[in-house]
Image 1: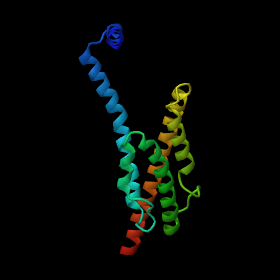
Image 2: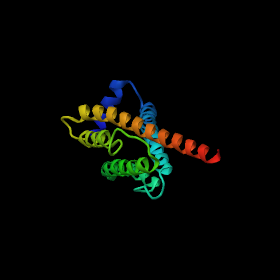
Image 3: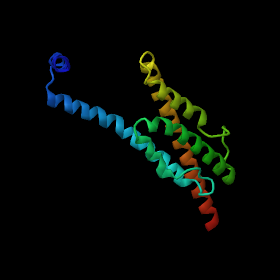
Image 4: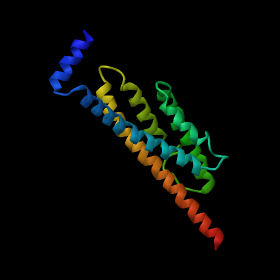
Length: 160
């Protein structure tokens, strides 16, 4: 039965097995590359936070790649990076509009991401989750840039 369905699908699409593998590979690359870049952003943000304020080692963001576990781990990352940024901003006297930077949009993206596996609403929550993920990524990158700028300004003041 499965073989018959596969042959009907492939025949309907007009694609052979090798073309389907190429398409699958391209889709996989398109999905994985942004995730890798996102995790690099998180790791680099953790690296800019002093050890005393860092709530987890930056390398642990890669645990997100473990299937199923990663869906739970993302909640932990969002909370720990928010707390780390909060204390680092306090230490460096950097102003933030949020008490725990990025936590609201981060938790929203996590919840929507988890809900995307629910059959009836998965498509809608998946799209909303993708939008929130992009916003969260942008916010964390902005905080990372703030830390870099502040670090450079502080280093420049010490030299003078």
